[in-house]
Amino acid sequence: MKKRIMQTVVLSAALALCVASISFAYEQGEVKGGVDVKGVIKYSGMPPREEPIRIEKDETVCGESQKPGTYVVYGDNGIKNAVVWLEGVSKGKAVPKQDVAISIKGCKIEPLVGVGFVGGDYVIKNEDPILHTVQLKLGLQYQKAISGRPLKDGSTILNLALPDKDAIIKKTIKDYHKLTKDTGYITVKSNAHDWMKGYIFIFDQPYAAITDGSGKFELTNVPPGQYILRVWHEGTGITEQKIKAESDAKPVEIDITAKGKTAGDDAAAIVK
Image 1: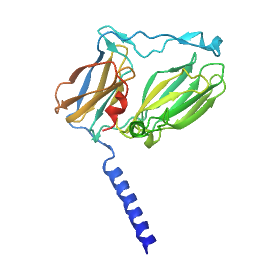
Image 2: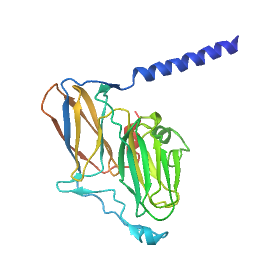
Image 3: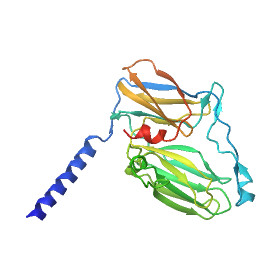
Image 4: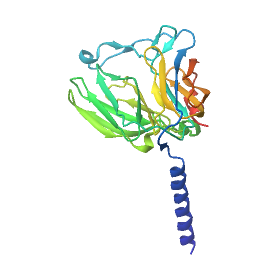
């Protein structure tokens, strides 16, 4: 009897979780009175000097040193490779079938930062004439905040070997890869060349973008409503701002200045 009651409780909990996940899933459809949200992400002050990384392996392909490339700031302090997205959007335009294309060239991950969407693919290519390995690690931000022994780089969701030049591996982007308060973003690592790094943000809604070389971004056809606009950058952590998109109005234009981060900024901002 007790066993049957326990099974019923477990089944009820599982059904509740399923209903909750269905209830909060992003709804794709026609957008009426959509508004564009665009702007510039700027770095506050002068970015810190980046010391070159000393290379002591496969130097003929990788070179003797590399620049970290964290801070790419141009013109009026516009910062490249910031990820911009909307929080609080439950329905709107269709989610794009967009792949995350990753190339390994000169023993560097290109691009440094990528944005992808559930339903697309990771497409990973080795452009070097040597063996490369790639690990995609889900951040598990909540674990870093609450655990006394968190996984150093998160949980490995893909572990791939690309032994030859022009080798390509294609893998499906899963629903659980998406950015949430529990998982965080994905880091790209290599256990063959430990200086290699990259970042991937996966979303199940389409209102996300990466800033260009001038720090500019644009989110198109946003449904009218109030949202939180969030910005992440490797050197600044998370910055956010409340915005209001009014039906059929002119584009919402935003300039955000992000400050250099301190230890724990990512976890503190994503974990609520």
